[in-house]
Every structure is written in structure tokens, then in C-alpha cells.
Image (tube, rainbow, N blue to C red):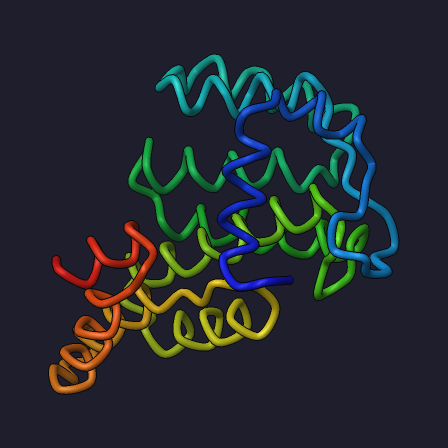
Length: 194
């Protein structure tokens, strides 16, 4: 995948409803994942409800999804977001995000290449980093960042900066932040300047 490919893919896919993207079934990266992840309209609706701050509706939809597909990586990803952000329960969030990653890897493999596998697996690894940081499990978060960086571009250099700050390694944090501040990517540049 080319540099910035992950962000470009996710940005371009964000323009389509998830269930429409599932119909694509196209491997943009020329890899050999087991299969692409099929995202149902109900999973898409639950994720949208979460993004619209309709947490009760999202949870109701997810309960229905899990009745028909108890191994839905998308459902467990959204449950993780609801637990950490909506309920402040990072421990429960970690449980859900681990399930999301495990179930995604059953379908997609450990280094996915198909459209939805890349999107949801990548999102799940990023959410695991956020959850581990919120639990002050910094060494584990660094391991997940390193794993993400081996699989996807661009790297999560902004997360490495926060990890260095949490570890009180301010010299390393300054070097990383300075590098980010000079990035061509606006999102990374803003994070470096912060």
C-alpha cells in the first residue's frame, strides 16, 4: 500500500454507506486476504447511530446484530467505542476491541489487504491503542502501534508521541512532535504542533 494509502482509502470509503462498500468486494491492494469483510446495513446503521451520539439506538441495533452474527467484528468495534467513550469503561472496551480484532482476523487474516478488512481491522487496532492509553497500559499500547505500523501506512507516529509523553520521555516526544509538525499530512502536522 502506498504512503497515506490507509487514510485515503478510509476517506474515500467514508463517502459511501458501509453496506454499499460491502458490495464492492474489490481488493484495492492486490493482496490475498482470505475474504473481504461483509458489513450489513444493520451494522452500518449501528455505527452511524454511534457517530450521531445515539448510543441507546446503537446498542439496540448491536444486540440484534449479535443475535444473528455473534462474531461480528464491526459490532464489537462499535461496542468498544460505546464502552470507552459513552460509558467511560475502558476495561470493557478492551474486552470488546480484542474480540473485534480476533473476529476480523478470522475472516481477513492478521495483515488484511481487502477493502473492508483493512478499514475495520485498522480502526480496531487504533481503538485498542486509544483504550490501552486510557488504561495507562503504555507498553502494551506501543506494541499495538508497532504492529499497526508493520501492516499499514501511514504510521501512527502521532500515537508514538503521546506514548513518549506518558512515559515521561520528553526528549523522544519532542523529536517525534517536531517530525510530525513538518509532515505534508495536515492531520499529522496539527498533532505535531499540539
